[in-house]
Length: 85
Image (cartoon, rainbow, N blue to C red):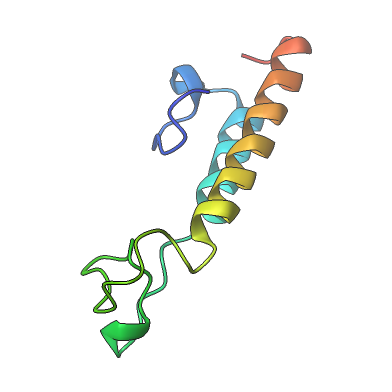
């Protein structure tokens, strides 16, 4: 899969459909949960988590971002098949 976190549409396209799909993907991406009490923050959040027993994402952002990236890649694949570049 291409760079999921790119700030530019694939190939820096000027196609308005690709730009809108890319913008929608960027809006769909989630940050990791940060809580006022660092004990409850996601370990992948900026600043991490005070609970050393947690190591991976526990806020769901990784799962949601992977799903958004898959939908984004699927749409790009379909659009490429329709000749949108």
